Length: 89
Image 1 (cartoon, rainbow, N blue to C red):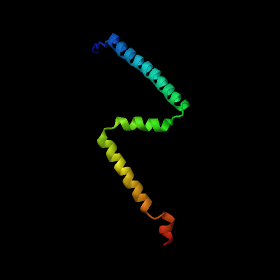
Image 2 (cartoon, rainbow, N blue to C red):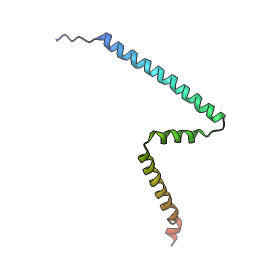
Image 3 (cartoon, helix red, strand yellow):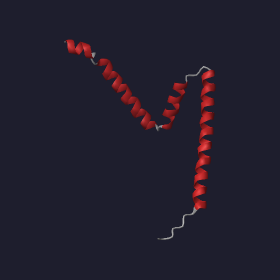
Image 4 (cartoon, rainbow, N blue to C red):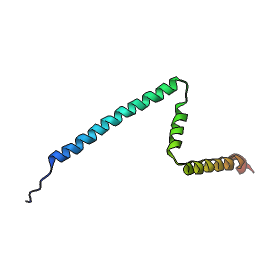
């Protein structure tokens, strides 16, 4: 059998660093919840705030394309006959 040396100290270092990052992420997520709760208590709509955050992550071209498609789809839907009326005709 071949002797394989596994660097246990290095593995432990990676695992501990990842565990620390997981802990930090949990703490940050808790802080994020607190900020949303504070905004809600001040009368702001949290869903809208989340939508704004989502939009700000996109570049301007992506936002423009999304808004154009949304507008196009909404107009198409509004001008289309309802399903029941189309079947009855």
